[in-house]
Length: 409
Image 1 (cartoon, rainbow, N blue to C red):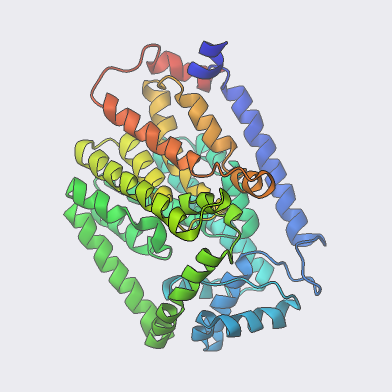
Image 2 (cartoon, rainbow, N blue to C red):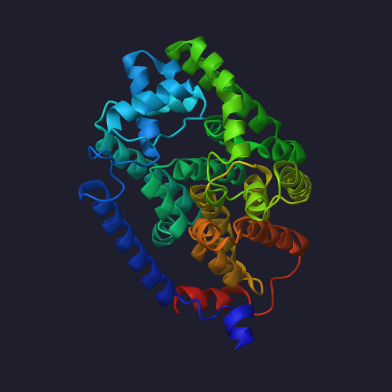
């Protein structure tokens, strides 16, 4: 039982995986239809859907109205939301003006139409990115309906977009499209806290063209937003920065909804300083892991898990829907496993990451059990494990015979 159930994971056959994905896809679609079109408890007194995407849409709307800077004045932005929804519930907008500019393209649509369009387009981008990694349309479809991606869709959040950009960057590196890889990084600056370790990876691997391409793209993207929105919007954004830090420190966002080491420390009863000390320790370990992995190996089955796992461990501010990012290293690990065989315990580890990818916040909020950092840590471990075996023979029982256990059941 240990060999089949835990070590080899042979019970994870394609028919079972396919059934679970089909059920998840149908349930997610029905859930979105219910949330968007049927009266429910996610609506405000006047029926406005109170999900995260409301702040995105209103931020884009302010661009069209000629007052983009109001987004970065918390009292003003809260008043705009209350006027629209009739609810005291409000959402902050802590993204740079580049993301606000991007949202102005969707703000020309009515709110729910913009919600649907944004979720559909960004999920389609992630689907295409997974197809580039795995080479299989069906496997890509299964990856975009894992629980984390469904959670992201329900919030109307941008994790599918950031995951797709990470995937485009990594695929670009693998296919020697270094300039395109840098462009993906430059656009990823819409969520800068997720890209902290990317410069470390590029320096370790001595990928100077990608570094230059990313730098130029970042400057051009920022310059475009300043030209369209005005330089004052960037000044307002930097003025608001301490507010975001205070929200994290004082619990303005429930710590149970955060997936960072810092958030887990607060749930465990540690104070701000102690939690940040633990966060810094994990961040240093993640930084060293990324540097070593990108210096010693060119294999994406090593680089992707270490970088993405490290990215979620190094930032103190990451939310439950950001677990969608883990789809990218999972895609590389699954591709390698199907081609050359899974390592012992690897299938079950991937199953745990995928199955729990949307459950960490409920467990933290309802049970007080902060397991969220364990998932990116598990992904990082799988990458480092591949690094230690890099250049060695495939695992016993691996290769095509192991692959058939998943593909044909």
